Image 1 (cartoon, one colour):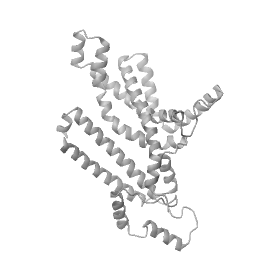
Image 2: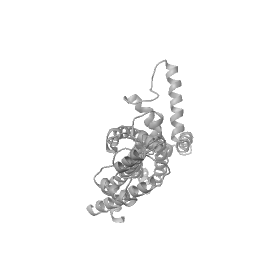
Image 3: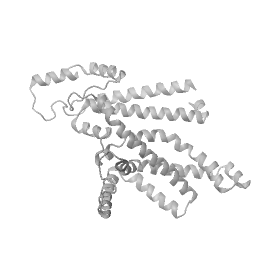
Image 4: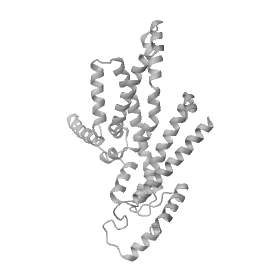
Length: 311
């Protein structure tokens, strides 16, 4: 098992190095100038800023410095936010994104398992058709459209009841989190519903389920002990990457709902060509995603030892 974990960890480090390298060279080939940013600047000021951020060095030297700092967990200083380190930005604002992401994962996992099981249980009947129609909408409609429609619905709801039942934007209370978390987890919930449905249908036609029925086991026990328990394994497999994707993918939702999360700062950094913030948050998000994938692989290796043998 330790060899399996070590192998996954080495693969993860290699993936993070590739993400960091690709991000570094991509940012240094993007048109624009993060120092001037449409502001007048003397040659002396520009030279001092280039020296401060190491932009006066050859690209290979900058890359080696970037890797050395990355190995120490130092993402540098923001180009736009004066004297503010990227590590501080991540430390202060990632917890907000993480809280929103965890709540979105709870919505997505609970809804995906529940609705997927219902569609399989009522296959080719009205609940199945209705839920699958909503699933298609959840997968097809972009998150920024859902976020905007949700805000319009909240405005109408608050006007109807005569008070702020659910806040339209902002952060601070549980009520602020509910709608953004639901919007953020909607597409993942739709995907998990489809996955759970297909897994349930496959388990339903398996030999051990037919054997349990022939022995007269109650349908409720068959559903909970045999069908649901075995059908949920594929959902567990994709839950790790889904957690990372939700936690790190709330850029648009955070921007629309004015949530002070890390995704909002990433979008602003892209707009302002803040190279260090872009590279730091991208590598951080990539490392977090890799870590979650490895964690799920290790957990699944304990659940099913055949995974360790096949890897």
